[in-house]
Length: 362
Image 1: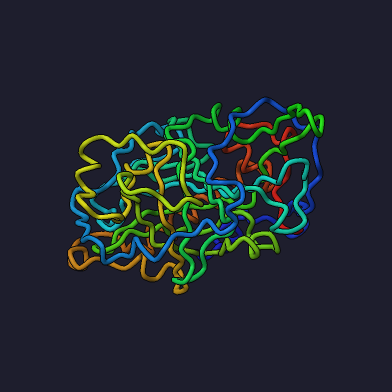
Image 2: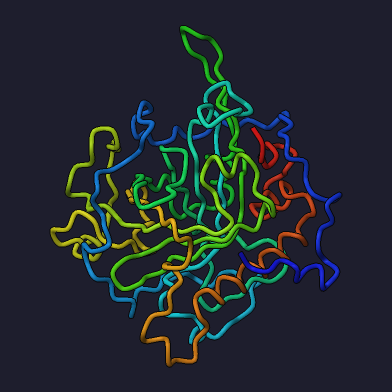
């Protein structure tokens, strides 16, 4: 993880007494009716896929595979020469981890109390560096659902995930995802779906090593991981091999969605007759896109390798790029609030008092 003493050197480091409380205090949250989440079969606790989607399926060329992200963050990011960015980095941005308890379980006390774990990816332009304040709303966030609830830890763990919502604005994240809801049933009366609870925030990069794509991340908040993060597989620095499923092949019954992604012709042509291909950012810009996450026990080392073409070029190394992004994000979040929960919600332009606090203990 990047050296977080920078803030202390500049008089900005949070003291131990300033850190947030880790126990969840159930707020009287504003409950707006949320859209029903796409189901991968509620009984599917594994969320796994057969040993497919391995990186040898197809060779991925990094040349023109960077995400086409609109530079709408001018107020909160500063320009950076795109030639400095390693060609292995397809996309970078802010990552948020959330969990939602089962029906009528406001505060999960174990992994079994969790209904879903979520990842929100908020891309930023290649030529941008983070600066002060929350990111402006570019309407390009993605919400990924992990039915398995925990993140894959090693190559033996191959878990399916899917894009619940792409191109999401902050208002959509707040109204359709973060909030809980109450509904009536004939047999059990009023039931309550709890609001989503934050469990982490940081920076991410989707990278290519030529034969495979990786999703690497570094956690900024919380600065010290707790029981919740460890039990759900969130690490200070982590990475997964990420592959996209060809929609023309049926998914296993336990991982089947009611509707597949509506990919344009150019993406469908990338698959040819392959069941899986290395993921690219534009694959995740389509609702119901299914991806396979394969754990990497070596951490971020493989994901942030320097490509041969970049070794002689005047570019930052991928690890340096990520560490710089994480340091900037740490300062930015400290400036938003010294309370970790408030900082996360402020970044998403949500009133923190309306939602559960960041949870680190069961």
